[in-house]
Image 1 (spheres, rainbow, N blue to C red):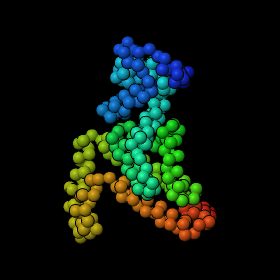
Image 2 (tube, rainbow, N blue to C red):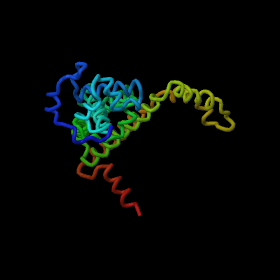
Image 3 (tube, helix red, strand yellow):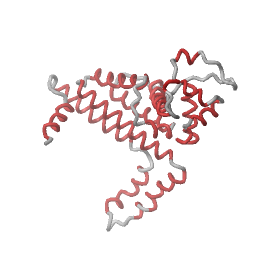
Image 4 (cartoon, rainbow, N blue to C red):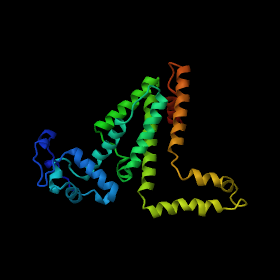
Length: 258
């Protein structure tokens, strides 16, 4: 889409639009939902005005009333994926269990729309669902007792880890089936056959590699992060009033720089 900022109108004006010739009443929600479906079925090339217009039964130029360009639409898609995660998440009051559940839901949500996740997982939307997610996660951490500097650093690590694994695993899922099968076969055809005299560590662990490399490492990495955060919270609790451990380490690293 070419930038058409002057065509974007306020939400109230959009709602007053008449149905299209095919009877479709356009909305941001409908356009985003259709874009997600096209991405899932046809990949990134489907994200064009013409293909969206055809799928919606609407004049493609009508989409400019809702989104300035494809990047604006992509931000809305990213925000919708965040919103879907938040709508299905219910905190139980245990900060570690709550963040683990949320992280796994973020990851699963991305894998349910791998093409969209590859395109949008690294974007900062500044939209309503992303803002809600930032507020929610920081609230979980602050209520758990993390000092503000530590809460921000753990939030940052948690979100970046979740989105990084989401992008990595989504990119793998977005590959054609033949390419995915070929990559999985490398562990069996190459690594499992390396001799112990030249590659003793790979040979010793080959049977475990064949099993473990088929699945995402995200749950393990998430547990490691949360275990480290829990240890830091314990340290904060024991030394109340002192700088948080993450803050102290960051300041040490800063002072060590030339």
